[in-house]
Length: 345
Image (cartoon, rainbow, N blue to C red; front, side):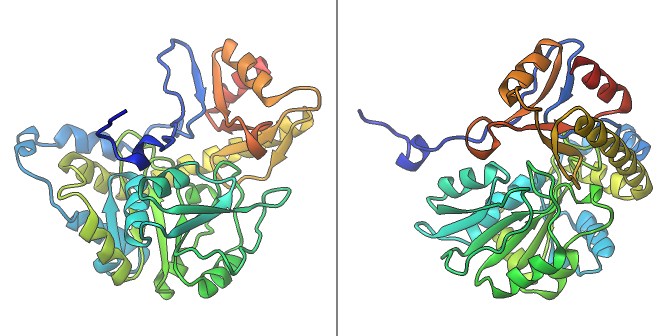
């Protein structure tokens, strides 16, 4: 049968985002969205935004936003890339730091978008299985990869890997390492930003979707050497971040205490939920993110618990198949939402 579609795209198994069902009264604990609103500065920026300016193209290099991020990171603007969500950063990195027929690698389990990005670029994808408990394991020296995607805290497990171990790996890895820090603001101040500042092969990637309560805005960024950042800018869309998103992101970055207070509330709730789930017989992986990765008590399958919660209008994330087949990822909501979750359990 003739087709106009490239063979690699025909064979591609697309990334499956978490459900966004439109059901009245549903409690969504499946997509790691922040349950609290963004800073009031965001609302002010929206109210003051000049709609007439939308007839003009946005700043193609996000100069003001890059400057703000660079100041916070202690780097120059040439060391900052701003993208349409961190997923754009990851997609461009896959294109920039691999070649067709080459290899990218990551831990398993990890962010399920990574292999999709590799397949889209006709790049092989190798995984390093995590040990029991999902903690750090040293990737082998013979991966043959030019890019390693390392989520820290990891998703879907929530485990935070030691910065010292990551640095030692980056120093011996022959290619580029992306440390994907989508959830880092829930990890108690630990991060790998210093590695991107002193190692030429490290990019640290961040997003405003989680801790900043701006998942609907699509803003992400990367910090790294001018060489790596420059490669991303060569490949990006002409105007990849719109005017409104740049204005709102600047406002949110101008009120870091609001974001930090929300993150602290989520962490406090996470610890209470983890303790209660353990008391109820769940196996709970220690988390440094805004979610928990858990296995139900003996005699109950993850699929059954997922379905039963769904019938009670509570939706969590289930990843069927492989090592994640008997686990659920539970996003941390407000205290009231988590009380409803426990009542349903």
